[in-house]
Amino acid sequence: MLAEYARILLRRWWLVFLPVVPILAITWLTVQPASPTYVVTLSFAVGLPPEPLREQAYNYDRHYNWLASEYVTQGFSLIVSKGVFADNVARRLAQRDAALPSLAGAIRSEYRSSVLVIYVSWPNPEQAAQIAQAVVDELNENYEAYWPQLKGSGASPVRLMDPIVPVPVAAPLRDRFDLPMRVAFGLLAGMTLALLWHHFDPIIRERREIERMGLTVIAEIPERS
Image 1 (tube, helix red, strand yellow):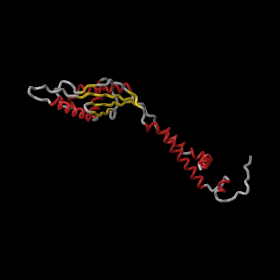
Image 2 (spheres, rainbow, N blue to C red; image 1 turned 60 degrees about the vertical axis):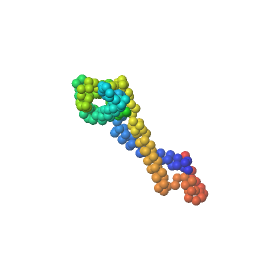
Image 3 (cartoon, one colour; image 1 turned 120 degrees about the vertical axis):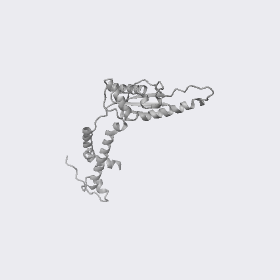
Image 4 (cartoon, rainbow, N blue to C red; image 1 turned 45 degrees about the vertical axis):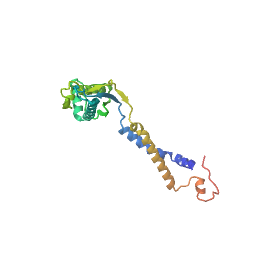
């Protein structure tokens, strides 16, 4: 059975590859190669300074200091994802003669316990490092603008734990497998067309086709050499 299918597809090989041609043409004209992306991962330890101990006062093993730090970490994670924070970072870059296009989507964050993690994604490694440094400076110098409760604390509650190092990121799987998947679907469509053509083709080309109909072949005229 497989050999029969192979003969059918080989007989109409041009029909098998026919859908692949426009797919390759459309892909070449419309799909742009993905530019490389660099990511800087910034991990910040977040913690509020403990209140001075008072005589005859129990501090619950600094439980409330840890709890407040958790709240601040979660709050900063939400603030960093807002457009106001990105605008302030962009303003810092402009003051340093490093103005960049919109930073929307370039800065994202998450938190894990009392650790704030910020990711800076950008196609240029040097600019990614500049954005990351501006993020660090914004958190260290302008924290009171986001948390009025910290006004007068004297120091930012965040401490950077990672060096600023842009790391290249591989292209998404969708971009890497987009063309092979399109070609595979094109070949599948072409094989379907070839099999349908064979099914509806009224012309008999081989004696085995007659024999499958239950008829006996008396003679066969050879092809001209």
